[in-house]
Image 1 (cartoon, helix red, strand yellow):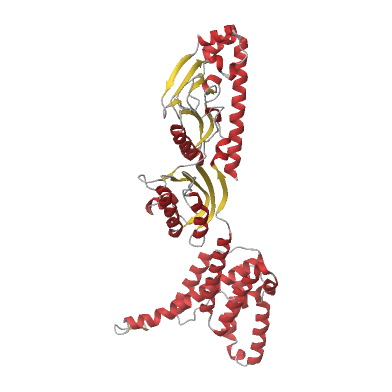
Image 2 (cartoon, helix red, strand yellow; image 1 turned 45 degrees about the vertical axis):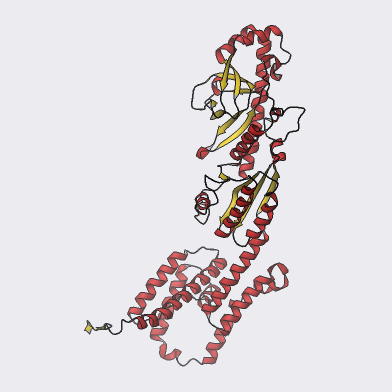
Length: 492
């Protein structure tokens, strides 16, 4: 059928065999031309110190090739030879590429009869010179350096396949070998950035004085923290298993900090599930923390761990927002299971508190007449950052966590206040509201002193007021130092 001079395909031609015959070479040609264009763009970017837009290049090339086919044209792409000649001749802008294309079109249109008389030997000589210019001589030096010798093998393999095969196969070989080199490099990088023994970690945490002086501090004895990094995939799964498996028989809490993990696949999660099962056999726990919300690949790691069955509410694997939360959970569990003779269970009266040492009996009696004893159950908050409170608290018994609220509902522990420690609200300091919360980790008792009562104490008993003020300065300084240290660790 002819319509407007165009011969349309009949129904007999639109068969599956015809479509396969057309699609296979067309897709092959599309892939080849796309690779050729992107490769040329990369080389041109390096030579002209520019940056191309890959999507725009490919969309423009595809649109022009489709329009060209409608008038019987031949599909084309960005070619290395013509581009390098253009640059070597001084053309470094987009205009030079346009002028070169127009000149080639005019030469084909007006000078085709004359060009036909050009000897093939001359054209071969031009192609040889162009080919010599295209050789990146710096890549030849890769062979003489052991660290880059495998990269030279990749280049050589691509060249040989291109010469004795075809460009599509050469591109496939190059991509495959590059993937193997990437996997090789990833497997050489340790997935364990740091391993911290639990006792070492808990020894530097506040609240060490909750343990009796004549008893060893066993907090964190059954815990170990691994800071993981890089890609957790099939290439590093065995390395991950070798690092974690020795801990399954001797530790009750294996904590994995995932902050620096960049990718995670099913093979790695299978290893983690095996570790979790081994720990469960010994009534131990696998604890995740610092889980990134979105990986560069777009994977949501926490959801992935749940979907693959590693983290579920009913088993021995748990996930916390940050390491501090995981350590608090471990500490609270250990404190509730430690024998009573190890924990300092006696209550400290005001007269026995280190902050008030050296104060006279008269001053202590005046303070005792002003404070109010409060009891806080474990898991309840003594004060919140969004509630008005102008009190100073002396911890009499128990353990109270003081933390500061960070962005995205994260918290940072400043101290674990034990008997004898002081906790101060922003209302007592008469300073702008600070995001501070105090949570009782164990059942606790505190002496509360309001700001008004403290002002009266300053007037009538300045000595004990000065002692309280000095203790507050030391406490605030320690909290500030703790905050600075933690913020530095976050930025690493």
